[in-house]
Length: 363
View 1: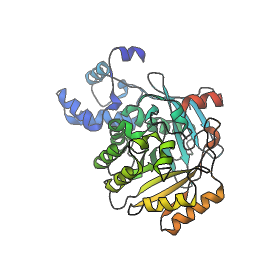
View 2: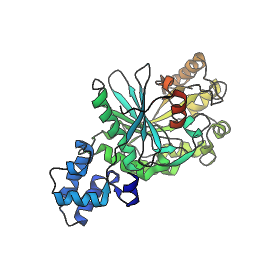
View 3: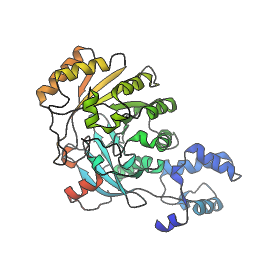
View 4: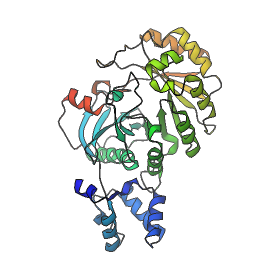
């Protein structure tokens, strides 16, 4: 792969179907050739350009001269007691990212990463402890889904194909907006992996301008990591709040373009003695007034590296009742994959490999 990169070849999976159609026209070919190539890349899942059997040998040779194919390699796999699966995928430059498959009673959800590490610096998140290395490309973002589908088919055929996708893995998705949008276009293309846009949710720590831009580009589910009801507390937990304080974030949520059937999900991590008081619950009710929304109350997943404790069950239940009493939809989210560092805020490809001492494996 290093030899390929030295030759300045392009990762062909970074190109959407429209991009490949435009490339084909630029080569003096009919646009349908671009569609054929796109379908091979994402639906038929070839290992090499020579497998593209319905295009000419000359065109295959041309592809080999300009592009490369790289399939993400699973260097580790961990399975939780609750059935959650976490993979660490090696990228073409040797970096690794983690993706998580979350089983539910009637479907599975795939949690994808958008960056190697993260630069938002949230105090409660293990990914933030990695620092930031780089953005993932569109190919690497969508490629996690392609790799997961392959691995399930080969090693766990009884597990159904993922139905939902959430961008809640490593990184801040809106800090990598252009690659995120391209990846979503690839993931939802009917000639490719054909995920439903209705079943895709993007999480953000609160990059307000990018949030609005995302809503204008795609009718997509939005999850806002709120985690506090005052600027003083949110400044402490999430440095991004100094750029986009709560007042501006809430205005951005009210301005977010979305269809009538959509609601914004507000993620609220329950931290003992920090954001779980009755006053916090009442302030949250006021903050969300007039916003089509639902609230996920997330019990904190303790970790020795992080200086927080989980709220008591009684405090979480009381918090939920106050929200429900104000006619807000409030759900206490059950943590999954905590024993393999796959739960909310626990993804850190370097730390989890070191702590788990897992051997590399292909599936």
